[in-house]
Image (cartoon, rainbow, N blue to C red; front, top):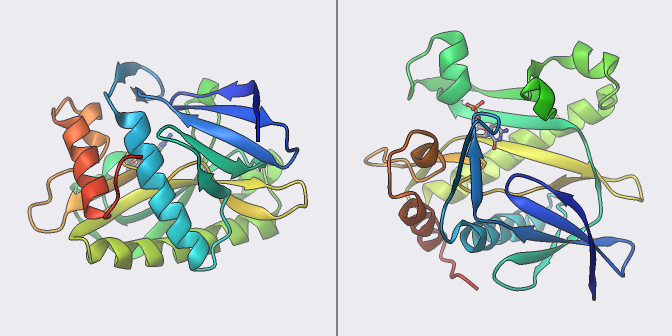
Length: 238
Ligand code: C5P
């Protein structure tokens, strides 16, 4: 397997093509951004930690029948993944009110939602990733109605798996964001990452935040929180 030219550089990751037409290499960076890039910083060791954490979640989901892009971890910062074309939708799943939902609906952070909420956001930096509905997705031709249904199903299924898995590690899954892609064969699979950058994790007893909200809100001990999540998942840095 040889790493070839960089295809794309995002806020937290770089993607490279390889000599295999079906595989990419993803490199995790230490760069952190929040509020659509308005706040920028570096979290020392974040690349390694998110690589290790996302590997654990993706392997676990693969084992439980959710198709993901994850193939294998190559080293402390890189993963081999299946080539996909990313669907320009962010699927956000919420169990507890926090962040933009708490603000938009005027709910106190920490309010347990009586039912799981699934939302779609348009992955578009220039527009600031706006919340969109099924009609908007249809008009923008971001995905077919069947694919939208599948994404919601996967979102709910992944939520059920993660909630239970994290509960046994004394972590409450507040909410998280997923991205999906389409393989050259036409299959919809989970892509991107599952990490403290993309999820809200709270200690189940103390409600201490173990995720990127510590960076967003200048709470300090960001790296320590990511390390604590990796420790609770039973992982080690490669
Ligand atoms: O900010 P908001 O409350 O909408 O975020 C919901 C969830 O989605 C959080 O876990 C956040 O970390 C994640 N998210 C993300 N990338 C974005 C927006 C939100 O990972 N661009």
